[in-house]
Length: 70
Image (tube, rainbow, N blue to C red; front, side, top):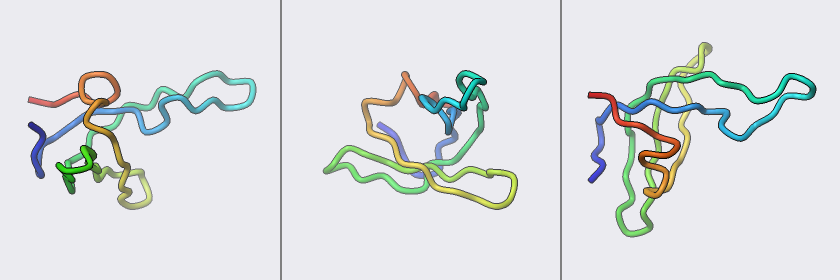
């Protein structure tokens, strides 16, 4: 089960293509900020270079799009 404070690694631009350049493959580390167990989603706070940002994921993304950091 995912918990607030866990460290994760993911690509915030997964599935986004830049015109003529292909996919963006920037991998970042973040910390789980909020978990909504009833609706099975969570959000992750990460540093985007100019500040922090939140990005939401479904529980089904664990292991696919989002990986735990030991």
